[in-house]
Structures are given as structure tokens and as C-alpha cells.
Image 1 (tube, rainbow, N blue to C red):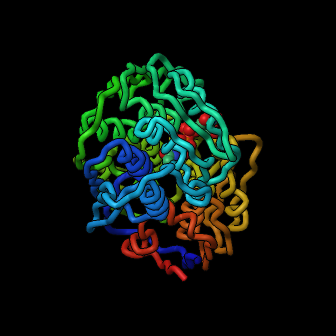
Image 2: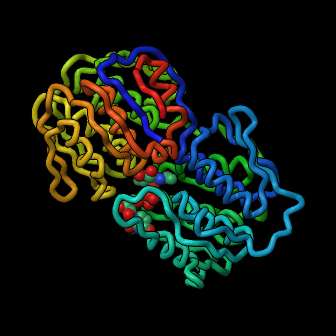
Image 3: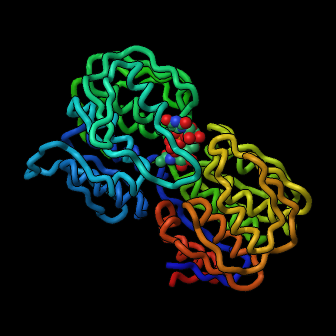
Length: 416
Ligand code: UD1
């Protein structure tokens, strides 16, 4: 599958943002902790959600979309067994690793394959494993799978880096049980706040989510419940940059401006004007952009998941821009492709330096991962001529109906 884009159209109009992919996926893992029904509202129909649904089905859940909502209920006819899932399923989505914490809490023993997900350099899980061990879990490797046995005893887990996934895995592992657990140097991302709010609604006792110290008091069991995760700040940010690189004027509904303030700050410095009212952001983009510097970091710093999209802005801004990724130091697959479209950019270590050109030109390019793909679509919208983005399956892991949403804003884009 490809996206074929005839660039140069100014994006104008309004669109609605989905619930955050990175909240929905850990919440789905959290649904394993209860035997009651869970409903996730405004859930994006993206392939990462479908992959996570298959994992839940293989451990005894019925997972269905009802309109825009995803419902997860226990399968009464499920025969049980090992509560295991295949290596293929695990490699299809990174958050399969969260089943380690969730399943071990629910069944007292989890045996899961190593996770997959977007590949931008090594994505180890040592922080997950060491944190679980610090809280009393016994972890081993059997038949190329990770085994997590013995319940969490409680205590303190100090993370060497505020890993989002490790923070989520530890929260999931600690919710059911007797212990009182503290996570120090926890990730503070809004998606952690969403996961904790969801589990607390079900009856968990999690305190301090959104700060760097989280405390989890174990409870006996959880109820069911409904959750509307926060809007996808990365989807919103992607469309804002799309408007910026096309000199457009767009309104996004269902956004939380606070969660993307680091991006809004950069765009403001960059000849864009905003109006923000409740959950609506209106952006009016000026013409030629000014060069800028940015460095990614854990929340509330600039998100690594918007680094590739910001790179497109840098590629067409007037002057020299520098972009450093301090979270994934090797996340520059988009740069090779942007060069094919006329971008003047060099990468040294985790620093990309752009000498802006007035406009990119169309080319055949390849989406190597989810956000790389998003960046190439934005580049295609800016470019003169036709751009063909190959491997849009990566994009469809995280963006619901991106071609249709962009077409509704006036982009000339088709999926073929
Ligand atoms: C999550 C997000 C991803 C985002 C990332 C950083 C989901 C589903 N994915 O990924 O979109 O880009 O946060 O905001 O929510 N690390 C280790 N050892 C570990 C774990 C992580 O060295 O055990 C390193 C990673 O290689 C990376 C950094 O820590 O350099 C951040 O990773 P982490 O925060 O764990 O990202 P993910 O949870 O995988």
C-alpha cells in the first residue's frame, strides 16, 4: 500500500482527534486485571489496537468495536491454559511487553515472547525487568520467552531513566496484591496519568501519576468501567505541523493544548498563530518559517514522537535548524528519505542539522516506521510535484484514516 500525494495544497478546515494510541494500548493491557467489562471511548481503529486485541483474545477476552468504542469482556467459554500468546502477535506491537506486568499480576505467572514494535535502534526492556525484580518478582528466560513469577512483594523500584513502558509495566504488576510499591523516577507522560485514572476508576489505589514518584497500594480485585483516554497529542501535533508546512489554517477538535505545549511553543516562534478554547485549537500558519532548534526529552519536554514531523518543518524553514533526539538516539530514518525530496540535512550521532530550502520536491520514499511515515506524508504535502510514500502499513499502526482526514482538509492524497 502507498499514499500518493500531489503536494502544494494549503490545508484548511477542521478535524477531530482520536483518543491517544499510547493511552489506549496500556489500558487494553490493564483490562486483563479485571473479570468485568471495560469500555474505551473514542478508540482509534488502528493496527496497533487490532494487534493488541488479538493478544487479549488469546488470553481469554472478547474484544469488539461498538461504533467508536472498544469493549473488552471475559470470554466465558475460554478454556484457559497457559494464558500465552504467539511470538508473531508479540512482535506485531510493542505494548505486548505490558502483558508481563498485567498477566503476572492476574495469574501470578506470565510467560511472554519478547516484544516488537517500531524499530529505531535497540529497544531493550532491562528497565522493566530490573524494576519488577526490585519489587520482588522472579524473572527468568524459558524457551526464548520471559517468565515473570511470584507476586510483587512491594518496596521501591528506582528507574535509571523515566521509561514510559517500564513505568506502565510496574504499575500493572503492582495493582493486584498485598504490597505497597513506590516507583521513583517514573515517567510523567499524560498516557501514564490516563492508565492510572483508568485503573483507579476500576478500584485500584495508584497515587502520584503525572509526577516522578508513583505509589501503588495493592488491592484484591478490580471492577469494570468506562474510560475516555486523553486526546492523542501526537496525532494532533502531526496535523498542526501539516498545516504549518502548507501555510494552512486548521481547527482541531478534541485536543489538550497543555499536553502539546512544547510543540505549540516552537510553532509560535515559527510564524504560526493560535487560538485555544477548551478542547479546540485553531492554527493560522504564516508563510516562510524561521529556523529553530529543539531537543527531545521525557515529558514535559519535546516528544520524540514528534521529532520526525518537526524535522520536515526544519527542512523548509529559513536558515539552519538543529534537532537533537535525547530519547531514541538513532531515530533518523526519515532523514535519508527527506534527502530524496531535496532536504539539506546531515546527521551526526543524535543531532540532525538542517539548512532549510524554500520547498521540497516530490519523490518515491519509504516509511521505515510510524513517525517516519507521518513525516514523509507532511513532506509530500509541502512538496512540488508527486510524492509516493511506500509501506503505509507503518502509518496505519498509529493514525486512523490519515488519508481521509487530510483529504477533508484539502490535501490531494490517495491510498493505492
Ligand atoms: C513509549 C511510546 C513511544 C515513545 C516512547 C518515548 C508507547 C506504546 N510507546 O515507548 O511512542 O516514543 O515512549 O516517549 O507508549 N529504554 C531502555 N531500557 C528499557 C526501556 C527503555 O534502555 O527497559 C530506553 C529506550 O531504548 C529509549 C528510552 O529508554 O531510549 C525511552 O524508552 P521508553 O520510554 O521505555 O519508550 P517506550 O515505552 O518503548
